[in-house]
Image (cartoon, rainbow, N blue to C red):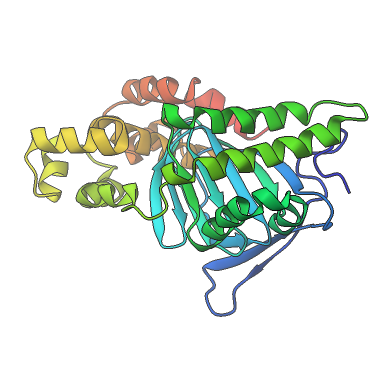
Length: 311
């Protein structure tokens, strides 16, 4: 089996099955086909578009190494969570529960390298095996999160090289690709000290503004003011703007408008209400304001987007 062959679909033939846990219906096992011979199980190039479907907490029978190409959100690894952004690299070892909450606009894009840890440890030279074993054990117990900083640029570059090599043909293509996987793991092992494995999760920084996020979800259909959102968090308006911008990467009112447009996309795709009715339902003061914001975030008019979505 050569799941990473350029002649096959990137996802073709590697996903075997998924099963919801009997003990917890919110958890799931997702297995991939392992042949026990190659360290590279497969490559996945995934894009998601809002409105996002909630990701159930799940684990795999191999290591999943992911690099965020576009978008932002929250990734959970075991009992920890971090805010991710373009350039973030995450590794979830075999058996580690993980999930991600996508919030990117207009899409979220990740690339994943699936690795058979057992084959890696079997094939690695004995003098390097201990370092790789520490990496594997850490990924299985806690997971690894490398932020988007410059110090991790080499790690991202190796990941990109793997996807570039997957497009090559010839008798040495497979050998080069498998060597690149070992290079990726070695780079991660060398950078293990900079991985955030035991730090307080960045996701915790969202807690001070969570009341405002909940307030928006319950009141987006009416006029909202920053002062209301700040009051829900027991903050002054000026301090709330500063905290919100730091955590979410946008102003409070931009978040409100993005949230409204997300809701509008859902109504346009699955409902029969007119554009005017949807503008009112999602809290816009006029159709003109709705159209302007829709075109800003989606790049199209509501009417044309609805027609395209139903083709």
